[in-house]
Structures are given as C-alpha cells and as structure tokens.
Image (cartoon, rainbow, N blue to C red; front, side):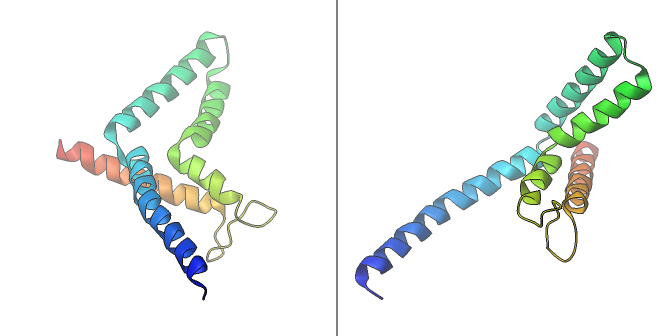
Length: 121
C-alpha cells in the first residue's frame, strides 16, 4: 500500500475515533436523560391540550398525539433514520426485524431506563 493511502486511512480513522464517541454520547443523552424525558412529556401534553382546546374530539386528539409522540420521540426518530437503510418497504434487514420493531425496542428500553432512574430518586 502506498504511503499516501496509508496516511489517508490513518486520518480517516482518527476522525472517526474522535467523532463516534461524541455522537454516541449525544444519542445516549437524548435517549436516557431525565430532563429530556420531562421536556418531551411536557411537549406531548401541550400538543394534546392544544388539539382539545381547538375543539377536536378527545379521541381524535389522543390518536394525533400518539402519532406526534411516535414521530418526535428519540426512539422513533432513530427508527426512521434506520428505516432508510433497509429495503424499499422501510424495513431494516437486521435479523429480519423491521424499523417498527427496532423503534418499539428502543422506546421500551428508554422507558425502563427512565423508570429505574425515577425509582432511584
């Protein structure tokens, strides 16, 4: 391998080793931070209240709020991003599970982690 190629590979690996840990830390903070969870809960409640206050049927407001939660939650966002990596149907081809399964699994882990943090306090 020419020395120039080896130097380029070294630079790429250094950039990745600097970037990936920071990215993982930010993702972890977004998924497990009690402050972020509280902000998200307040945002969801405000969304629901605004739908009902504008005259929407509570059942319809609840259904829209669920969709809002799915599209706004960190787990849902990650699932959407990951969905672009799969087949044309939006499924990720990892062990045969689709992006909805991954999003659900992420959300369950987040809920469990948050429940554990609140129990500790």
